[in-house]
Amino acid sequence: MLFVMLWMLVLCSFNSIVTVQGQEQVNSDQETIFGHTIDVMVIDSECLEEQICHAWRPLQLIEYYGADWCEPCLDVEISIENIDTTKYAIIQHHPSVLDYSYLNYSNQRYETDFRLIFIPSLVIDGEGLLTGTKQATELNQSLSKNQTEFLGIDELNIANSVLNWNTSTNHTLKIWKTESISHEFDSRNLSHLAVDYMQINHNQSQLNLTGWLDNWTGRLIFTLESDGIRMLNSLSQNPTGDMDFNTEEETVAILSKTDDSPKLAIMVFIALFVALLPALIMWKGLQSIDSDESE
Image (cartoon, rainbow, N blue to C red; front, top):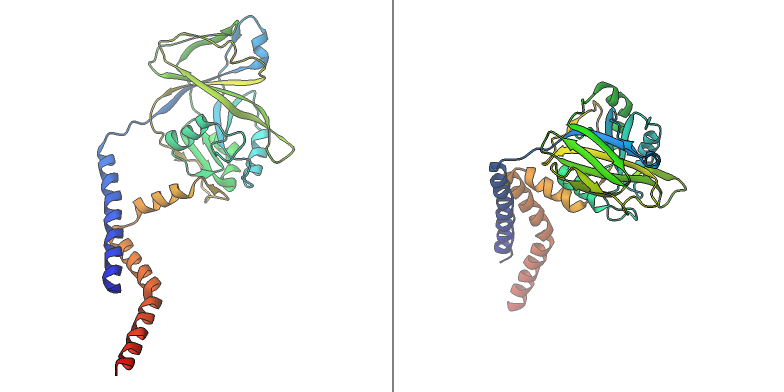
């Protein structure tokens, strides 16, 4: 009876694996739409005091994904503080729900757009990736080697709290509001943390930002993007350094999809057999006792 139960468990495990891989095959047959960052522009809060505040275009966009509870993130955040923000745009994302400063829009970008699973991670211009503290040390080197030519927004300014912009493309304008926020555990600030977000379509040339910018000091980062999943390329020659998994469930799902079904079924069989071996020995011993007593 125990052998029958063991074999049924193996069959169930094998069928579940086939189901997962079958679903993956169905999804792979569908056309995947890939997104791109086409243009980036910046407006600082100090500029809003002027009658018309014109946006400027940074050399590159750096998106950092971290968490206050993540100890390896400290070194990465220190290196980010040394970036020249008069030339580069920086967005610090907190996609973890464990953070007091968690932002659901950052989580969506982390999980859905970029499909990341590790923190700390750095995304450059929406296409280059550095993961872990060791790779993060290559940030300056990666910035100098990988230059992206941003183009697509013809004009962007804010006058009397009204955003005016135009583009000859049909892409979406995404607006990230960042500001300096205190670290939850350390006595320091995160200077470029994303605190809010909105987006507008290409055919909406004006947007009233009254109320959204009240009592705010920081930076607005505008990204013109085509919607879709991002195909990220590693910018590092080094192995991945210290990191944390975003969620344990996500990691298990990825491993389940990439393992070979027959091999995994055999491994499950062996694991279950080993787990049930003490019970088999006990059962055999009880049978021997029953036989002796019957005699």
